Structure formats: C-alpha cells, structure tokens
Figure 1 (cartoon, rainbow, N blue to C red):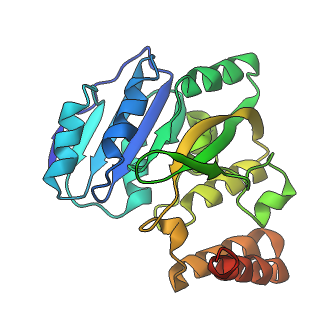
Figure 2 (cartoon, rainbow, N blue to C red):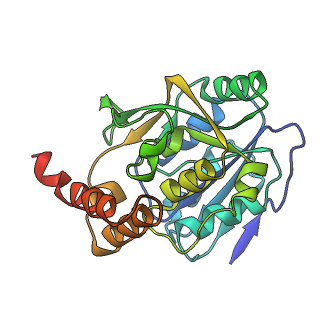
Length: 254
C-alpha cells in the first residue's frame, strides 16, 4: 500500500469529498476537473484500488492537492468512502465516483443552502445523465423530496447529495458491508433519525449512464440488498414490490 498526502487537512475547507476508484474510466479526468472547477477549498480523499497506471496519471495531472491519497486494494467502495472521510475533517461530506461530475457552482449552492438553514442535515439536488463522452443524454427523473417513499425507493441522486459529518456520525456512518445500496441505506438511516433533508431545484451533477455501471447490473446481491433494506423499513410486501420493480427495469427500458 502507498499513501501520500496523508492528512493534509485544510481548515478552510467546507467539504470532504471521497473519490473511490475501482477501475479506470474515460470520464475520470473530467471528474477530477469538475472538482478543480468548484473554486473553493476542498478536502479530497483519493482512494485508488484500480492497479491501473492511467488512474494514477490522471490524479497526478489533475493539479489537485489531495488531503489523503491511497493506492492499494481495499475492501470495496463503501469501505473506501469511509476511509476517505476518516482521513478528512471538513464538516460536509460527499463522494464522487470516477464516472460522475459535479457541475460548476454545485458546491457553492450547497454550502449556501446549509448556511441558510443550520437545521438542515442533508442537501441534495438533481442530476443529468451523460454518455461516455460527457454529453448530456437525459435527466434523472427519479429524484424527489425525501419522505416516507424513501423507505421503498431511492429518491436521492448520490453525486448530488451532501450531508453534515455530524449527522452521518450520529446515524452510524457508512455500512461498509454493502455493495449496491450503501447510499440509499445511508439516506434511509438519516431520514429515520429525523435529519432534515433540503432539496435544491437545480442540477448539481452529471451521472454516467451506460454499460459497466452498478445501476446497469441486476445481480442477486443487489436484489438481496434492496429486499433487506425495504423489508426492514417498509415491510415484506413493499420489499417484494421494490425488488421486482428493479429486477424488471431492464425489460421496461428496451
């Protein structure tokens, strides 16, 4: 394992962004650049488990200063995110995958919302879908305000969601055992704990929608995680309906 830039804490940073990278993706340079274009101090934890020299080269060429940078195998995406957050100290948490981008001004809008409402524990917004070239191909239309429906359906676009570190800690942090639903499960625990969600009516991120994404994979592990999550909070009948809906989604998309 190699770790560089270990705990270079920026006391002026409002955001700690974890970047878990499991494999090279052509959008990675653009993803890194989207952070550089936020025009504010950030604590970025770059967790590279890819073993691909192109990933390291992209990070080196980004011009970013990393609060924490690790190059080694890890226990999975959720564990990497938790590791990144643990090596930062900024009060607002988020994560950005190698194939997703923040839009210019996204973090400024989020911090303004947090400052306007000290009672808000989570701020989230919308996302556009992009292809492998970064071109917008659609709008993520399955995004809504947090409410009881969150127990049955993930209404939050992960790259466009940011939470206070204190709220995440109070809710128990990231469940590192999860592979597919770590974001949704965290939102549910925050909502169940009475944390206030504030939705911004604006696009905050661009999300890659194509082959190779977890969203495109309907696996037994994913369906099991969904069933357990929904059953825990909404009961067995809702778990069946939610799981079947996800399983049939590829057929409806044809």
